[in-house]
Image (cartoon, rainbow, N blue to C red; front, side, top):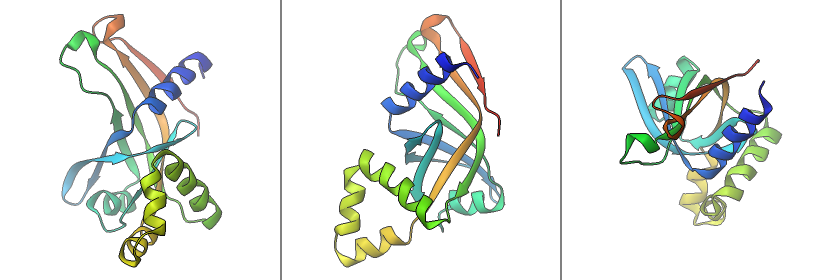
Length: 155
């Protein structure tokens, strides 16, 4: 792996907060926006296990995701494209570790855990997911139209 590229990808992911996650299931392709936290180059999030994207992941863990700010000029576009596999975190110690990453980045999640019973129960029912990337593409049009650098990640 290219450690300099890996560091730039990690810095980019740490800067932004919303990924667009694409899944596919029996109803066809689906995309949703989610808050995420970084676990190295992997992304973690919480979702209700009955959402469409969660059901899709249960049926087929292959996913794609993008992270990018909003731009109005194509020459400024920078972003990340990720292909990999998503899985629910079932081991309690890993769930707690991933929740701690999310709650450190998004304090409102920690407040949910302390909140009124209904919010606490809803938060407790969520599933923690982890996207393990196989390929990450860093796009940076400021270096030329369509400039891409690819990071292949071994399992």
